[in-house]
Every structure is written in structure tokens, then in C-alpha cells.
Length: 199
Image 1: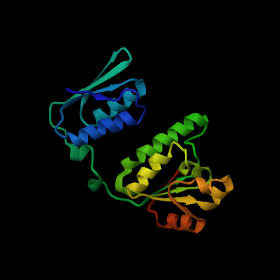
Image 2: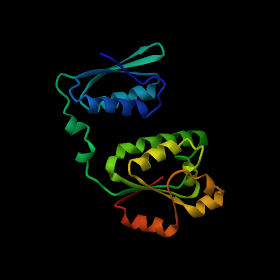
Image 3: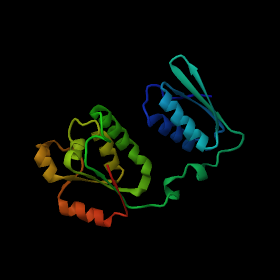
């Protein structure tokens, strides 16, 4: 059995890679995942157990081996729903900061990077993202979050970036993704959204 090599990947990438493998191979009754840190192994274990697998973890030097097996075929449609099986909602995410959470700013930047790159997992329910205040810094040239936001736009997600905020930070010319917008458009978006998540 060819292992799913997630060495060097930080969360949530090992889980996403494992999930992608299961979606591509719904007949799978056993698999092995390689990770190199305890949080990744715990997250992969929890995900696989939620899919009906029995999981064993073994440390092999710097490598942590997560082995999973089950006695019957995985009911993929019930456990890992596809986009067509998820109730679609018009979800709006407001990014008002360039970090996620409070405390260490370096950690906050890393968490925001991971958050944005995990948003495609929301599928078609993700309708629009609004960046305002320091959140506009996520859209500029050189930002680590730029490729993730560009990918979301390519997938059809609307991205509005506050023009007043860009001007305030002197970043208008450096914006590389999204539509420069105004407060009226932002308020209208809030009115039309079925669900609003503020970060």
C-alpha cells in the first residue's frame, strides 16, 4: 500500500490530503498516512475515525505512521459529502484583520494563511469575502495569502476589498486580487448574505 506522504506539511494540509485521497478512492478499506508532528497525527486520526476507520499510530524516528483499516466499504456519500450533497447557503466572510485570533502576530499570520487556504472546503456555500481595515493587507502583492485568495476568485468566489481602507494604508496600487469597493456595496452584501462569519 502506497502511503500518503504528508511529511513537512502543517495542519490542516495532512487532513485535506487524506480527505482528497478518500474522495478519489471511495472503495478504500485501508490506508497509511505519514506525518512528522503530533497535532497532524491527532487530526488525521480523528478524521479517519469519523469516517469509520480503526486507527493505529506508531512513531518511527521523525516519522509518525497513521495506519487505518476497516472491515467494510466506506459509505462515502454519508460520511464525506460532496458539494452537491451539502445544503448551499449564501455565506459571507468578513476579514477585518490580517491575522487570525489575538496574541502572537506571527502565529496569527500563519493561522490566517491556513484559514484562507482551507476555505475551498466550504464548497459552493462560500459566496463572498469582504476585506476591510487591516484585512486589505491580505490582498496585496507579496502577501503570503494572495495565492489562496486568487484561487478562491478563480473558483467563483466574489472578493470585495475596501477602497477607503486601501487608501488609508497606502496600498491601493499594490492590490492584486478582488474588486475595490465602498461601504454601500459592503452593507448591501451583508443584507443579501444568508450567513455572515466575521474574522
